[in-house]
Each structure stands twice: as C-alpha cells, then as structure tokens.
Image (cartoon, rainbow, N blue to C red; front, top):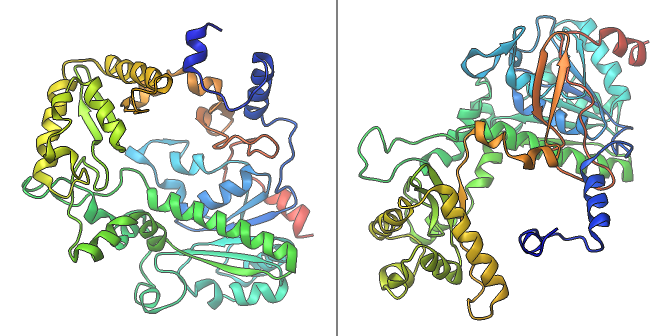
Length: 440
C-alpha cells in the first residue's frame, strides 16, 4: 500500500496490514459464529402490515426460529409491490421479508386454528401481531389469554394509534398503512417545496419509501428484544405496544421544539435543511451532489474549495447560518450552484477530499472538512466495489421465486452477527415441519 493510499484509508484497528485485513474479513463473514437468538421462537401473526414482517425478519436474521402464521388464502401483504412487479405472484417487499422464516397456515376464524395458535404460543417466547386493537383478545388469543398460558411471553402489538386511548378507539376499524402513519405523525407537512413555489409544487409530500413501516418494525424489534432480556431475568413477559404514528413522530424531532420556541409551525423548505446550511443538493456539470458544511470551519473550508472566499465575512450567510430567513437561503443556494455547475460530480468530490486530507495535516487550515458526495442512481450504486467488499448483497435461487439479489447482514458484528440462510415464502410450505415440531 502506497503512502498516499494510507493517507486516504482510515482504519480503527491497529497492527500490521495483514492483521487488519484478517480482522476485517472476520467482521464481514458471519459463518461459524453463534446465532444469539437460536433459543427463541417467534410467532409472526402480522396481517396486511409489513411492519410486523420487518420486525420478525430482524429476529430471524439473529437466529430466532420465526414462524409466519397466515390464513389459508395467504397474507394480503404478499400482493403489495411497486409497479406490480412480482415473482410467481409474490411481491418484492414480501420476498425481502422472507428471510430465514417458516410458513404455516392457520385459520384463526375458527376454534381449531385458535387452539393451534395457543399451543404454539405456549412454546414460543415472542408473538407479533398487527390486527386491529382488541381483535386478537376478542378471539380469545390476545395478550391476556396467551400470557395465562405462557407468563414469560413477549407480546408485540403494532397498530396506527396503539392499543389504548381515544384515538385507538376512534380509528379501530381503519387498517394501518404507511402513508396514514406519515400523515398522522405530521412529517408530511415538513416535506415539500418552500412557500411561494405555487401549486402543486408546495404540496405536502411523503417519504419516498415505506419509512413508517420500517421504523415501527425496527422499534418493535428493539422493544421486543429488551422485553425478552427482561423476561429471561425475571420470568415475566410483557406487552410491547407500538403505534406507527408514534414511531414516525419520533423522527420529526427538533421541528416540534422549534415550533414551541417560535410559536409558529416550521414551514416546508424543499431541498434545504432547517437547522444546518449548507446541507442539501446542488447541480453539477453532469449530475447532482450532496453538500454538508455544518460547522463554521467546515463552511469556511467549503468556501475555499468552491472559490467563494469573498463571502466569508458576509453577514447574510455567516452570522447565523440556521436558515430561518428563507430568502437568504435561496440567495446563497444560487451562489453555490453557480460554482458547482462548473465541475463534474467527481471533480467536486475530489476537490473536497483533497482539501480535507490537507486540512487534517495542517494546523493552519482549522480542521475544516467540507463534505461533497456524488448522488448515485441505483444502477451506478450497485457497481461500486464497496458493496462487494462488505458482502452487502447476496444472490439467492429459489425453485418458486427464481434468482434474485437482495441486501444482507445489515450490520457487521465481530461475534454474533445477523445472517440470511434462505429466502423462501411459499404459502404453507412448513405446515408439516411446524406441526411435527410444535403441535404433536
């Protein structure tokens, strides 16, 4: 490795190059390491709600035996998919959440199906459900009834407004959906073009992915994992009540505080950030770049990189760079863009990196680190060798679904990492396995 390469590659593990490479290979490779949840059985009773599937996927990747329970006709989530794209009738999101799971069909509308669920719950450690609040209880298989059978059971319930309160009661018959959760949380009012842009450009927007379902699924898994830890210590189970509106609202964060401080709601500000500036997207000669320069010395460094130093002492842009005066934000946005369009995205990235390297070595440059990153398209992102080195994607070949690639091992851990052993989701494919192991 050359001296210049060493300067540009920062590692947090000392020792020789060989030792570092061995450590990094071991970090990335999950094989031969223990599955920390191998003694946990999870019943996923989620219905028409991907947040439950996402929650159980996390448990499955860490080694839990996850049994997805569906009605005989299948979970409607199987049909949810972008642009109608599917594999043998199964939607892409459902395939994504089919990691390491077992599938059994039970008809919870009849007594026999409910009896089987009770028998499974007696041997399980975690149950996940997304039915309307009180529905499982009314069928005799809710939190109250199942914990009588299994006092140590962790019962995760996911719904729009949670299991209790007036809103939960008012929206009892409204199915959970990602866009509803986004709307209920208030986040949509903060996304969209600035005031004055004219209709329809200043219309509230939703996040471009099903972020609410993902957030609530992750938060449910976190709560479930902590509850399981508590159950192991005390023998007592508990309910984990997740409201999707709460999950998304927790991300809104500082705009709420700003609203109380200013006594007015935060307006929509388009591509700008409300707390940091510059912090957004700018055109380049051949595409778009993301720029972040939150600290004062980062801001000054950016001015040097873009040859805009004459604005260093301009009171409009330096005295208070929290962009509460939107006209000033727009003025300076145009000043920056007049420079960025002179260069390609790669040139801008290189300019920022070279300055940052010199800044790190020089006590005279103030340590400023302007961040400029090329905005990638999915097609170009997948060509980046970074993903191959980290083994971030894996190819699967299923007799029903065919060949496909998907992201794997969402975090790297040295001792007890997640892993994907299979991706299969044929309706009822594990009926015999589950009945033989748990319902004899």
